[in-house]
Length: 276
Image (cartoon, rainbow, N blue to C red; front, side, top):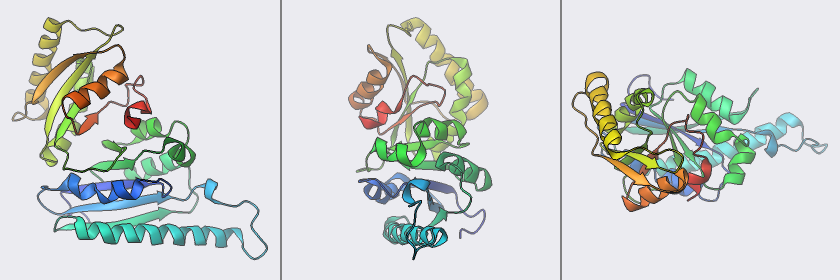
């Protein structure tokens, strides 16, 4: 267990234990936190789901025995991940795991409920095999998590090969979006990263360059007055594409971005973006 209040940065990593590249992604998390000052904590979190149960167990296996066996298998796998992570994490970091196995709701709800009980800085989801995650979490799982989680959510389709330091926030540059900068800038500061802003012009949502420049000034004023007087985005980009998702992907590639930051309210951006 983690001693209370001793971590400057804490991560909850939700695991399905049923994805071909999940282990690779989890073991790359030390690259994410490299350079963070002070102690930190990482907890691997797994929810036992009905798709793993056999609803007609054999005579020699009761339903409770089946749950106990599945929990032991999950704990053994998570324990091996913890040992490998502890060797790679910076000094001062602690890693452990938790398996939910009693009276569980849907995994998305369990994750959200757990985040209400325990304080974390960031939720990480290893997401590549979409069908596997849909079986584990439900068809709308990713958006459910984004809407319910009270903290930033990092969806990883692949393992890090370098420490991520270039964050790109996708925004329509409207004032109602600016409050989202509070947790985002805090996260960028903690990770010692830089923040870029992106507005994608499409045939259905177009912003003139002069209007875009005015919104940039409004956003910077908001940051200075309400978020962090010493923080300024590295650059604000205006990008044109026929489709919002394609534009985000193209801009991320063109400008060598490590992480794309999206608002849960931007429902037009579906999970296609993490499959690219």
